[in-house]
Length: 79
Image (cartoon, rainbow, N blue to C red):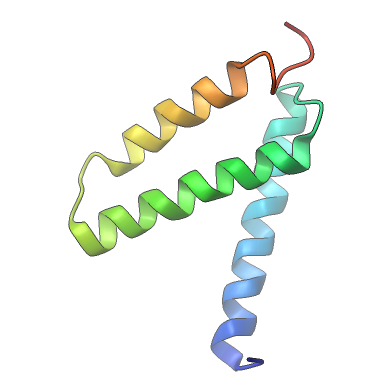
């Protein structure tokens, strides 16, 4: 499974994971990598819903869930 398309998708997801892990770290998450993966799942899920199901609210629903996640005591050691 080392096709060019897979390599591009992997780089894309890795960049997003790095970005989201950084956001989780700055938000005070004690396990920023884990929270980054959770955020990535929200982003990718929202993308699929919007693209394949025409869900125009997918981004706002994912944003709401992400904010709840970042504010949760399990994600933030500052609370």
